[in-house]
Image 1 (cartoon, one colour):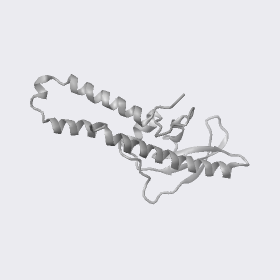
Image 2 (cartoon, one colour; image 1 turned 135 degrees about the vertical axis):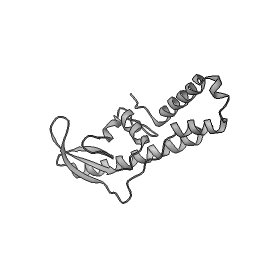
Image 3 (tube, helix red, strand yellow; image 1 turned 60 degrees about the vertical axis):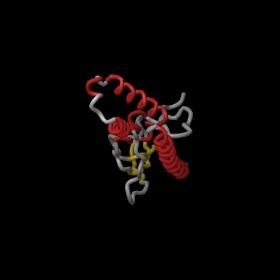
Image 4 (cartoon, rainbow, N blue to C red; image 1 turned 90 degrees about the vertical axis):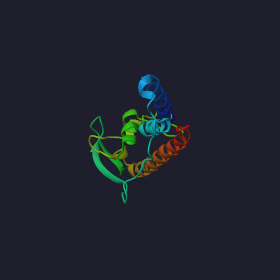
Length: 157
């Protein structure tokens, strides 16, 4: 099973924008500037690139897994935006979704707000796993931004 992607969000956004246009009463449309209305709709649905908090670095926090086992959460503080709220809520993938991966795992907003991170079990191999998780976090952000950039090029059309 594949996770929903940024492209899926934009398909939804396009449908929502079309619906808004078609449901707007004719008497209201007559007085509207077409370019101004289009700009409003684009601004309403367009996503912003994911931005790491200036000067932030990845940190590791001792915690427990959902099952109560000792674990570490590697997190990277990000500039929290409406875009990230949608990505976190929907568990959106960027480009090249990892099959069977739950992208909501990148977000633990109750314990680690305004971060993107992943859990690592406390194990003898945790150093290698932590390094792998750091790579996944960076790859996820890059994947999101690439997908957002591509969709932002075509969405206004």
